Amino acid sequence: MTSNSSPKTRPDKREILAQAILDGCPVTELAARFVAAGYSETAANYEAGRAVKDPLFSAARRVGNRVGKRDWTLAIYRRLHAAEAGGDRTVPVIDRIEPAIFFRHFHHRNRPVKLTGLVDHWPAMERWNFDYLVEKIGNTVVELQGQRLSAGDYELAKDRHKRHIAFSNFIQALRQTESSNDFYMTAYNDTVNKQALAPLWQDVADISLLRSSGGQDGFFWIGPKGTITPFHHDLTNNLLLQISGRKRVKMVAAYDTAYMRNHIHCFSEWASSAEMAAQDKDAPHIWECDIGPGEAIFLPVGWWHHVEALDHTIGMSFTNFPYDNDFYADYPGETVF
Image (cartoon, rainbow, N blue to C red):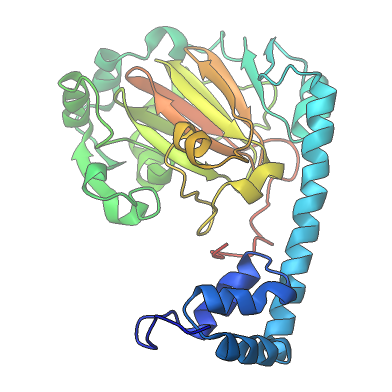
């Protein structure tokens, strides 16, 4: 058999080997990979034979086998979780949950839950609207994520999108915007906003599920309808709470990470759950729920989530649970998967 590809147009042999390893290609099919890439049968057999003798290739195959074993183990959890749910794979909703129940059945078991009745006693639930916020904060300079539509990687490159603006001008922009994903005050802007928005803490009280330090433990999220936080997973357990407006939260379980196209750090290449379902026959189950004023959702560490604002929103998030929430210290870093 002869090849129609010249050495200049066919892929480099190292690229072929690397992709074969990533795909879990059996050694017996390695030569076929080279033939398919445009190498002659003679050259393909030679390269395949040389590869299996290469210590680096053997080591890479062992790493691949270990990853495969871990994916198999996680798939067991996927099947058992589905069996336990008995076909009902929706996010449960619990009003005024007892802390012992929350930690035993959700926090410690790494499962999401929508919670109501946690902050009915907060003055913020009655007070926080745009007029009140401007009255309290005025022209104090705050930080937000801006010009997000100028780049597709706005979530990865959050430092590049930091902008500073008088709070009153930020609220004016919100009033004049019907829907946009171009600007958004997020938890990532907390270093500046913790102090800038300090007057609002008088309207916030304790939450029974959280450890109070007597300080400002939460993070602010304020933005227009249409803001999107793309699929990613956090490195802590999180409680996402709405004060005003609604958000739609779509989640994928941590045990389905192998299906999430985790290309770098904690981010996914999937733009939406619809794209995921259309392109991947093994697309994982999507857990979805909306949260509105006074409602919260527990986002377990490692669970992938995509959040879209259905209205102009004012919200907060918290990580100060009374149990160890440091899952970052031994995180492997910005590994490309």
